[in-house]
Image 1 (cartoon, helix red, strand yellow):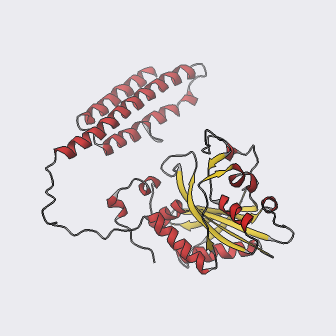
Image 2 (tube, helix red, strand yellow; image 1 turned 90 degrees about the horizontal axis):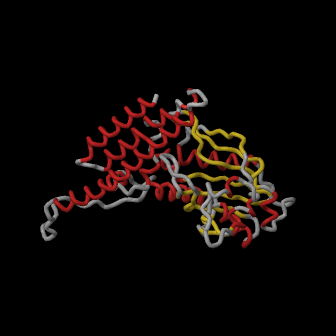
Image 3 (cartoon, helix red, strand yellow; image 1 turned 90 degrees about the vertical axis):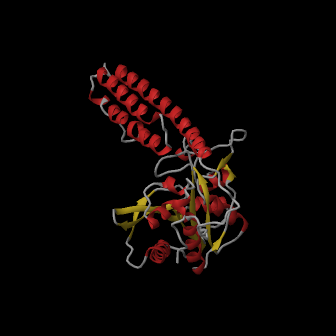
Length: 336
């Protein structure tokens, strides 16, 4: 068992030595994924812990942690060398004579895929009478949590999920654009029909999540608004953005600020995919903004713009949208 860990350590050293002399960034990343990625060799070793005798697990787990830490340390050193190697390689290339005429035609440039999706979605909703509102990304606890019926013991208030301001924990980087609906409803009276696109922040970072991402929330408040209006609006929007053959479904779910609440799914090549959340605005939210829930009802629904862009453009890794790779971004054109 422990001999296997020694063998793994030796194999990692061989893989490390193979690229040490020329540490190119993409090779370093491949090595990281092969060894400590979610499906890497070290992760597979962790999955064996449950099959060991109970008294052996702590000792084996400790040795496995030591091996993982050693691999992470060496990968970080190699990553730093890769940056230096890339700089040195660029400096060693022949200087460019900027006085020479260009031999290639310059690109006209383009628009970031997330911006393309946001523009298209705003254009659609404006046709249905919605107005675009924006709000602060750094906001008070009241607008981000309390007024949205999110109690003090809710998991989203935990530091593992939310970025709090160190000097004043009552201020947070907003976790959703729902804070905009509170600001708007405190300033304006019904009827309301608003959309609020923008950046939001949560403590997360992997292939499908980012600590900063984009959302768009839609809110309608008026007399006699029902779930049927909500479903009709979402279906109309989905048809406009994905085409007339799109299939949608609603799954019951829980969000503190709506009741009832539901997840929105669309059917794609790989089956059903969650695309957003929705529901009827909770009476407690109306109470927070001095709306009479006996007179007014309303609905809210929201989408992740990054997930929407990934779906529309067939992307598998969220990080592609944020790495600034010109060759990647240059392939996108304006959506119709």
